[in-house]
Image 1: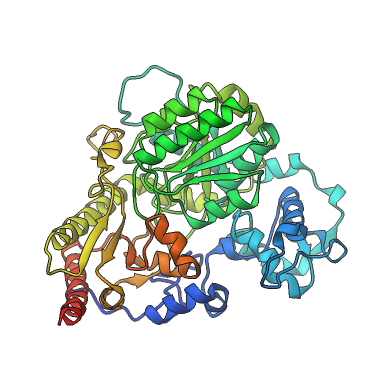
Image 2 (image 1 turned 120 degrees about the horizontal axis):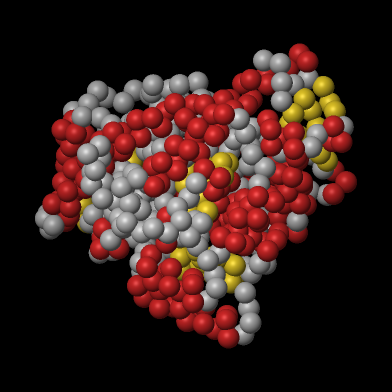
Length: 526
């Protein structure tokens, strides 16, 4: 067994670099509190995900924040109200860098906070650190003193070029076929300050072009769902991402097409978070082409090292914060356009017209450095996750075990869809199934016992050096468990991101947790 976790609640997960994006959430009592009122728990975190901080450095995003905060959509039955137009404004400041501040009464913080937490368009901790050093020269300036061209030059240097080139190298290596179609170049890679921004920004670009309904196929990270609900004319959600859902999607697309209603894009995670269902990407590609719809795929969980789906997508988005960066100390995202796509002629000028570089230089530098060992780290993450999954799968096949099911690309019925797009083996890397999985327990008592007995850090993240456990459904959907259950998410599921620890040590940690859960199942049977 590994050393007992001693990290205090609310502190960064060790080795806890200055710009850590993780926080140890503690035991099951925190799960219950977080699910009831996440903001009250986050208020006590000494470390927090930088995307959750309300700052901004790009003028357009500040304007979007004002539009969001003053919208009537902010009004709800619990007393939340939009910010009055007269009480919110944008001011421009310069320390080392130029940044835009949205100014509003503190009483409306929870309303405005929704903009920063969902689109992921806030400044990074490194931006804040550098500019705080220059706070003594802080000055307010006129918005006329800034220009998009200035921003384009500011955050688009040699390190960004190197990062785009590295991404293209990974995307184009060990491809499944010898297809001679055009492949992405560095000019087709767009860098964003967060993974969510790499979804939100392209989504808003396309709203300017298509103004149609967005389809989300399969479960996705909760903020992705929220972004599509909050921004745009409508969302059609197919929560299971199953073959049956594909039939329903085809019926929907056919009906929309017949009535002349535009469907803007089909978005899907590959695999989906947190149940790791892998959609049939070949059929999604066929449907998108048949009904003239953009197909956008988020491959963060599968990752470029393991899967080759660039040729199937019109837009490929990835959270670089996760396994690509790998050290839980920097945030970023990317969107890659597929030059072989029939949509490329529309999307390329659209992206070039709207895109403004926002990935801070220091963050780009950190990610460029950290991603140099992306392949060997991914190999270890793959191996650890698969070893634990195979152990838990054996438990699930034992009627006496409290483990009911394991959700993972290798263990799921949709495994064939995943394996169809795995990259070829190469001398430097053999592809695998990723670091993420969910384990489902027999009942709530067993779930709590497993969670408390599992000697790993409890946190929201994946692809880190350390193994992390997160009670996904209870923390994100405790207030709407019926909706979650209808989409396959149960409170008895715990999401796990395998880390780089010794495999046998991890297996022993999980054996101890399973034994603790088994005792509660045995008590329930008495």
